[in-house]
Amino acid sequence: MHKRSGTRVTGHYRDRTWVAGHYRSGSIVEDRSHIFDHACQNREAKKSSNEGPLYWLYTGKVTFPSNCWWCGDEVYFHRDENGGCVLFDLLGEPWPIHPCWEVHKHKQEEASAGMLENYKKALRGIKVENYQYTDTVPAEGFDAFLIGCDFSRRVILNKDTPQFQEIFFRYLVYKIADMEYMRLMVPESALETLLKKPHIYLEVTTHKRGAGVVNFIKSLRFEDENTENSIKFTVKPEDYLQYKWVHQHNLSTA
Image 1 (tube, rainbow, N blue to C red):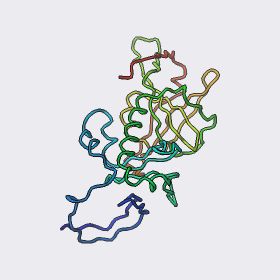
Image 2: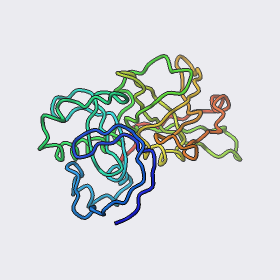
Image 3: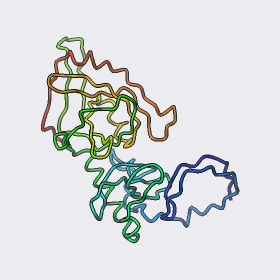
Image 4: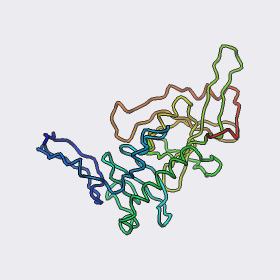
């Protein structure tokens, strides 16, 4: 037995049923964690959860865009902090659950493990040229869902002065609306943090370079919306645009 304090609970999937966000009053709770097992919390994933740079995919809460395991439609995969999984057609009220998820109840664990594995491969194996990008980026903040990082290429900014330290950038691809994608240049130093946060609230700054445009992160907030999980970038893209850019292609993604 233990005492549970009253708190605001976010929406989550429990016992194959979506539970909307609500206030939970304090209570005395029997500890049943030793006998409870979520249907879609893959055992092999849990076993390897502490191995490799993308271990976070198999632990805790995560939301990312994907394709249905059965029909191939665009969906959102969501796993709550307790390991319960679900596929949504759209995020937000009324939280429509994708029909295939209900039809294939006995194959949810297999599908969840497969979709997590596919997303892990995409995070490190996409090609930026395989996507078409929107020409209009929202002026204000917006939700962005990480598709992946193109590790086969890198941009080096070099000021051609001995005292200037080279700055390395990578390309991240985000889904920002239905069938709309955006390419971002981000410092390599920020990659580890961003790859662990598939769903962020993002503000960007857009600048022209040659015949195209370049998007840089201005600020971002993680999904849980806590103020301590906000990051403001001190990047001055207008300065970077004046530097010499060296493009590296066909790099190893291993």
